[in-house]
Image (tube, rainbow, N blue to C red):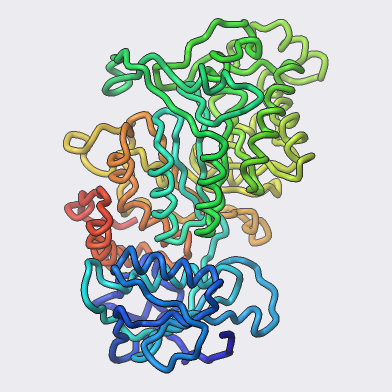
Length: 534
C-alpha cells in the first residue's frame, strides 16, 4: 500500500479563507483549497492493510459519524477511496512522533500521509471535521491540500475525579473529546482530601475508607452548607488499565496525579499513622486546603513508595504527577519529628522540609526510570534535580523553572482554569469564581517573552485544568469545557492568532452541529460577548 506521492505547493493558512474559513479547529499550519468535491458514501473504500491501526480507527469513527460501514481493502482501487501512505517507512526516515501529516482531497480520492509516527491520526481528525454533521446518504468534502504539524509537545487537559467522581464511560468520552481536537495528554487527578479514587492492592483501606465521604458541600463554599449523603467511588486497577489503553489507541498519554505531601486527608482517614498527629480523620466534606498532611517519617516514605510502585505499573507515562501544591506547614511546625528532621538535615525551615520530601520521592521515581512533575509550589525550598513544573499561579513559576533548565507545562489560572466562569456569574451555572472567556483562552501565549531562545526549549506546552468542586455531573463538565477547549487546542497547535479572533469565533460556531450530533452540552455565552483588544 505504501508509495510516495507529491503534493502541490501550499499557501499559508493565514492568507486563506478570509470570508468563509473551513470548519477546522485547530486550524492547520498550511492549507490550499482546490475546486470541486470528493463524494463520501457507503461505497467508499478505505485502501490500506487490514491490520493498519489508523485504518481500523478511521473505519470505526466514520461509522459513528455517518453510519457507513466502509470496507478496508489492500487491493488497488482507482476511485472513491481513502488511501493511507506512510512517508516515514517509504523514505526510511526516523520518527519524532510529533504528528506531522499531509491530507489531500481531490474529486476521486482522499489521501492521508503521515510524516512521523502519529501523523495519520491527526489527519483523520482534520478529515472528520470536514464531514458535515448528521446522517446522510452521501457527503461532499471540499478539495483541499493540507500540510500540518503541532507546535507544542504537551497539549493537555486535566480532570479532577477526586472532588466529584466520574465513571469510566465518561472518562473515555472525555478522552474522545481530547482526541477530536488533537490533545495528546490527559492529566488524571485521582487523589485529594475529598476522595481517593485509585485501587492500591497493598493498601485496600485507601479505597474502602478513603474512597467515600459522608457528605459534600452544597452551594458555594462561602455558604458553608453540607448534605449528609454518602458519596464516592473509585477505579479498579483493571479499569485504569482499560482507560490507559483506550487513550493510547488515540495517541493520548495519561498522566496520573497522586497528591503529596498535602491534600492527603482521604489517605490519612484510611491510614492515620502516616500523619503528624495520628488522627483520627474523616474524608473531607468541605472544599479548600486542610492542615493535615503526610508526615515525612521513614514509614510514610515506604507507604508512598509502595503506592507509587503500583501506580507506575499501571501508567507507562514518562511523568508521574505528585501534586506538591497547597501544603500547609501547620502540623509540621508543631511536630517534634518534623522539627528534628529539619535540624538533622540542616534545612532552613518547613519549606526546606517540603523540598526534602519532594526530592526523596523524586529519587525513588527516578530509580524506576520515570520523572516527577508537580505544581509550582515544589519550587519552594529548592527544586528537585530532575523535576518538571506545572505553573498554575501565573507564569512566574514556570519562567523561574525554565531559567534553571527544568521542563515546564504552563497552566496559569487566568487563561487555563476551565472551572472559572465564562460568562456573567448571575446567569451562569455555579462555579468556583474567576472569569475566563473564550477570547481570553484564545489570547494565551504559552511561551514567556522573558525567556532567552536557549531557555524556550524547556516550555513543553500547556494544559487546561478542570477542578470539580462545582462540577457535580458530566453535563456540567462538558459545559465548562466546550467551547473553551477549542481555543486552547489552537493555541497549543501553534496556529492561533488573537488578532483574528472573529475568524476563530466563526469556526467555533461551525462546531455546534458536531456538538449537537454527539449530544455534548456546550456554552454559547461567547456569542453575546463583545470581542476586546488584548
